[in-house]
Amino acid sequence: MYNQGMKNVNYWLQEGPQTKVTQQYKDFIKDIPGSDFNFVIGALEKINKVLRIERQHPKWREIFRNRTADQIFTDGFATGCTDIALVFITAARAKEIPTKYIEAIDKRYLESKEEGPFRGHVFAEVCINGNWYQVDPESATAYALKDYKHYVIYGEALDSWDLGIKSYNDIAKVFADFKKEYKKKT
Image (cartoon, rainbow, N blue to C red; front, side, top):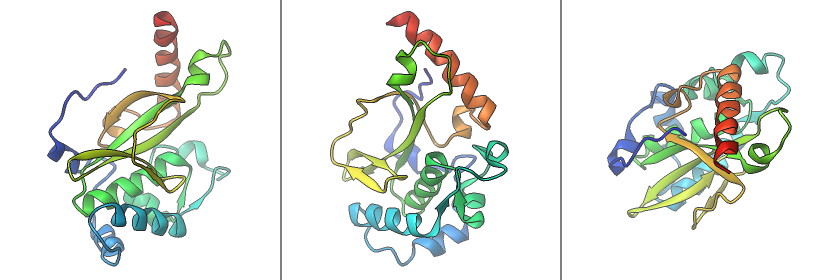
């Protein structure tokens, strides 16, 4: 498991290699009101209006985990939860809300005997008034309590590249290796 360790809350305001705050993000967030949950909800709504999901994109495997948040935003489409999370995280940090990238692996995948395709999800966590809250950017939801009961957290980072996951092949290997170690422990 990847572990960033205990980081100061201000650490989560930094840009990651995929989550640079550009002028495009500053312009995008300027009309979203608030600096707390009001902003989080407004940003989730706006992101889900401007990004379309293209899980069947002809170059899906080539671009999966291979674009920056700025490229995703400019392209106007997401390949799934990772892309939407990257755009949300960048927007939240642009608003100076400390935000973590959370890589999670589906427990059913980890506990299955099949070697089949990996299954996971990307969440974010935002710090508001000193408390951390779970956000699922793909479903445009924020939770008062963090509940990852269907997942095992692989790691928290600034973004996917910060975890060393830059492609489909990277994540397939990381998840398969993690699954082997997980099975040894259970």
